[in-house]
Image (cartoon, rainbow, N blue to C red; front, side, top):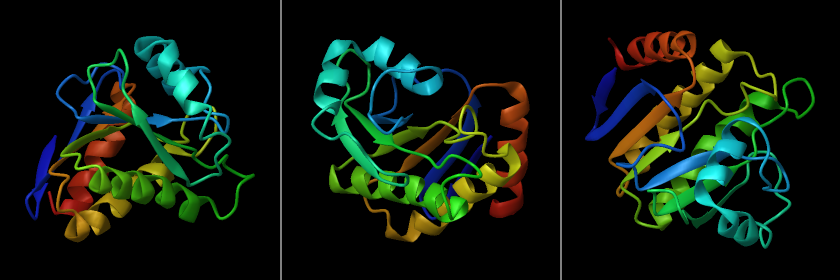
Length: 178
């Protein structure tokens, strides 16, 4: 699904966040120490190579909601923006911290002249944030940020499963007025 809002394209696709060659930046759903792990962080670190972990160490640890930017190394993307999502039921207030992940990532993209960025579904895996609630926070935050975006013209949400994609598409249609 693709929606255009005030000159910014928002799309939802199913795929691998580490395989988005047409995006200038991808977002890593990172752990606090910015190390390889499972899920999104593992896929991105494996594809990027050891240089990514080495550069990440000068920024670690990060707090929930914080975002930092590195080079993309062996990825087809110029940049990786790393953000630490909240652990549901632990990091409070969850919705504000999750919103901060998307907001701070977009602000970093703006500061670095990034025109296209791909996000995973932050905090919905190992950090147990309920998908429907996380989706509402993610899309609402991104849409609210659009008036401030001068550089970013394309925002992609890369979902791991068909069921996740369906939730994102329904919420985007609801928020963007189908």
